[in-house]
Length: 106
Image 1 (cartoon, rainbow, N blue to C red):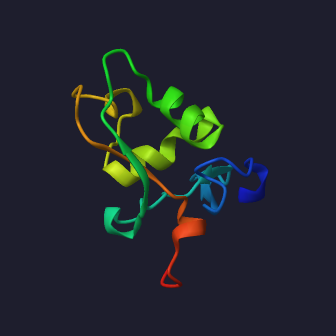
Image 2 (image 1 turned 30 degrees about the vertical axis):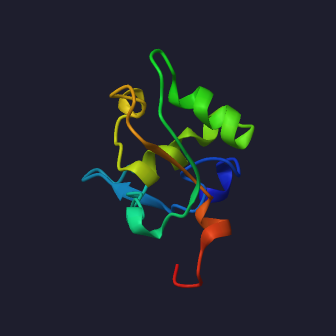
């Protein structure tokens, strides 16, 4: 069940599915997570990352929780967290969580 994920997990509301192998063995897995369109995010702030800045450090400073890095990645269209603060000097959107920023069209 997706409730097995902590409230700060990107997979919190993603359903679990079951794969049934030809021999009948069933294996649960997390269904595909659809990343919301970047246009849905509202900026809490914008920063220009400096060298050696890590995305989890940005999340810790912005949200008080380094595990919320995925929100920043999603809002900026970054699939790879390690690349989210590159190139240096790029304008990086720190979004309000969609749960807060939602205009009701979620």
